[in-house]
Image (cartoon, rainbow, N blue to C red; front, side, top):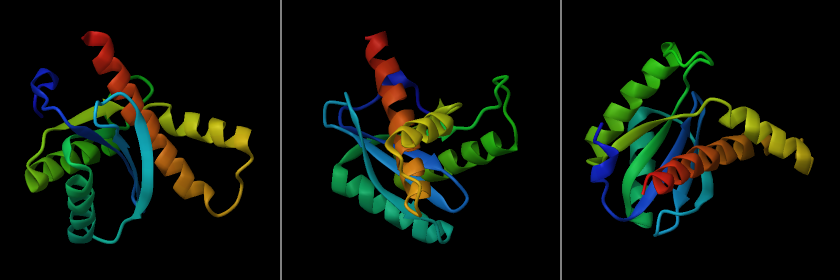
Length: 148
């Protein structure tokens, strides 16, 4: 993955990748805030890549952040290895720098926030994925801003 210091100006795409859905968020043009986009229902690699390519074009994305599901100990496991492979594939397919970002607790935080709103119906899973993507991306953007 490309060094973060070499990032280009433009929007950043945040992804919370699961087996069935991909939560998607995009930054504002200045890279300060993250907003959720519709969740992608996964079908197959070709479809998923095509949809991500469309989002990248539509929002003029210059780099991507993929949630990295590390174990609570910080060690990598099977899921983190899958995300590393996914990140490498989209980096090659989309020709953009891709960063893996620690997503520990992002889904738990999304559940906590949704519990506060009272959303309990069928939309909850999609909202969780979108919110987790927003939390991953916002965490990345905040950490980057703190280093400047």
